[in-house]
Every structure is written in structure tokens, then in C-alpha cells.
Amino acid sequence: MVMDFNTPACWYEGVYRDKARVVSAARPFMICNNNSSAVLLIHGYAGYPGELVRPAIDIAKFGFDVYCPRLPGMGSSGKDFLSSTREDWIKTIDNVLSYLDKKYKSISIVSHSMGTLLALIATKKHSIDKIVLAAPAFSMPQLKSYQMRLISIFKKDIKIDWKPDNRYKLYYENAPCDDLELGKEYWSHLYPKRLLDLLELKKEALKLDSFSSKVLIIKCGRDVVTSPNGCDDYIHSHNVNASIEYIENATHFVYYDIDKEAEERAVKATVEFLAR
Image 1 (cartoon, rainbow, N blue to C red):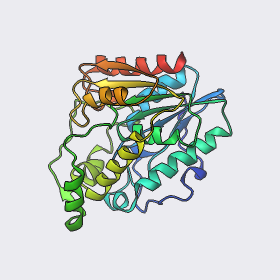
Image 2 (cartoon, one colour):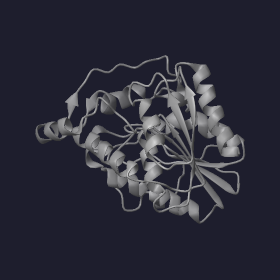
Image 3 (cartoon, helix red, strand yellow):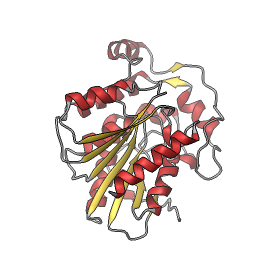
Image 4 (cartoon, rainbow, N blue to C red):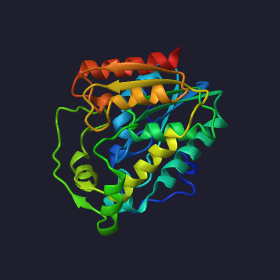
């Protein structure tokens, strides 16, 4: 299974170009074997492609070409994150899908957290066969729009406590080689303007009443970042052809989870859904 990091330059046309070095874990990648169907993987807020290596490998083994871009501003530096916007993230996904539209008969998406919102927004312009929404960012009870708007007037950056959790085992090369660097730049900060972008993405994604894609929602019982109940509310309020895989012991980071049984269930459910 060969992972190619030389991704097309067209993916990043017309979007913010990062000034800082992109860490190795955050490099965008492709796994291509001239299959007729492609799967686009989309990481989440302050995330990076290395988080999705495990599902990417399993999906590729089942006969799909796999593509995982890096969203602008992520995986490099906090300054880059502050300089990027939700428009850059949306445009990047649009660019990648436009590239894939020319090459493949069928395109599906596997997305995580904020990436689920970008996946839904993409359906407005692109024909997507299937979408996997893992730990979707439909409900984030701790994130209040009015608070972020007020704070953003006075502060660009709020320092918070963060320390690495070695119970999470990632699958990229030399993992977790960039964990401390990424934590210093991203996870030990709150960036109010970017959090407002996240909330705006949620608003835009949840405006979509219906679309033709088949949907699998992976609902994580121990998710403390997004509310699992938001999945139920989404199903009830939208005309979506969706099935739910509820994994009681899964955390928000389900594709490289503390609980390996939960991780296996998530990856298996993802691959089986795509292969149907």
C-alpha cells in the first residue's frame, strides 16, 4: 500500500497558502491503484490528514482510490490558522472534488468532526454517492456563538491547558512525532474567530434539507467534543437517507480511539458502508 504525498497543486488554487512549515503528520496524501471509484477523506477542526490514515488504508485495500487533503491553516502554525478562513476550507474541498470529478465514475466522502460539515456543504455543487459522518459537529454545547463573538472583539488567542494523551495511537509514519508541535500551535489555544467559522459552517451545513447521497452517521457514546444527541436531532429534522452506527465506547477521535474495539467497529462500518 503506497501512500503518495505529491498531491496536485490545483487542490490549493485560490486559497490561503501557509507560511510556516507543514509538519510531516499533516501532509496531504493519496493512495491510488487506478480504481474506478474514489473516496475523499476530510479531517476536522485543527486536525490533520495523519488522523485519517487508519481508515484510508482499510478503504484502499477494499478497492477504492483514496485522497486526503490538508485544510489550509492546519498542521503548520497558529499564525496560519488565524490567517485562514472557512471560505478557504470550503474552496479546498471544492477544488479536490472538481479534480476527482474528472477522473472517477463514483465519489464518496468519509469525514470527521468539522469535516462532516464540509462534506454536507460539498453536496450543493457535487454529486456524492455516499457520505460517512463520523462524530459529526451537529451539536457543540460548550461552544456558544454570542460568547465567541464577544471574546473575538478583544482577543485573537486564548491560552488553555493541554497535554498529550498517549492512550491514542495514530497510524501515520513515526506517530506521534509531531504531537507536541501541533499541541503547542493548536490544541493549547482557543482561536475565537476560527471557532466562529466552525459555527458558521454548522449553520450552512444544517440548512440543507435534502440531498441524494446515502449517509452513514457514526455516533460516539463517549464524545465530549460534540454531542451524540445532535445526530438524533439531525435525523429527525432533515430528510436524509441515513443509517446510524452507535458505538457506545467510542470517543470523539474514533478512527484512532483509546478503545481499540470501538476503533475497529468504526473502520469496519465505514468500509462496509462504502462497499455496499
